[in-house]
Image 1: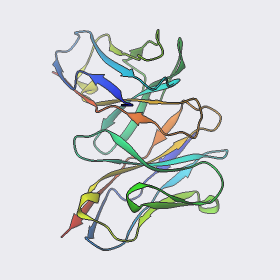
Image 2 (image 1 turned 90 degrees about the vertical axis):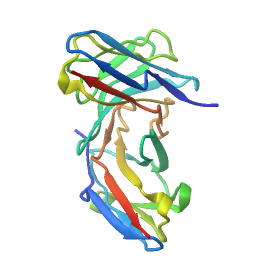
Image 3 (image 1 turned 60 degrees about the vertical axis):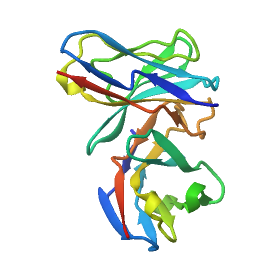
Image 4 (image 1 turned 45 degrees about the vertical axis):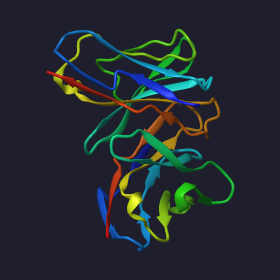
Length: 113
Length: 114
């Protein structure tokens, strides 16, 4: 079954404690993205990757890092989380044709206290 | 820079009534346009997309959308709403010159009255 898998689904952490949210896709997609969803703000793109070792900033990259060492994985790293990074995070993947839709993971609800 | 505006934050319709959700975009070249639906606690699912050709596109679950270049709009419609259509709907634009870059609207929450 084609899918994008994020882990964990729920995470509560403390300010400053480094964390990683994993994302994996089994569709051999070139493009992968991370979004955060906040009430009234829709989805905002954090980072995206066009292929292995190729990443670029989205609209709200501050405080986040990503890596793309393998085609199927695109982890999101928060080196020093802060409360304003409390949000619902989605990973998405798509093929390298610009008009193809993105497939989304189920989301990770992160709370930073 | 590309942008998407969904003017309606919340819409309520009666079951069986028609629906139109508005979406306006800003993009300097030919846009790739998408509508996604998000049910509570779920990820996003594609309803339909437009990238070229016929400006009226059909999607899943009985939805359709019309691309109007002169109005920079891509409104979503459904002739008869079902209670299961209650969800949040997002319009998105993809950059034809940078396939990785996507911009979403703030979303419209649809409530369906019995």
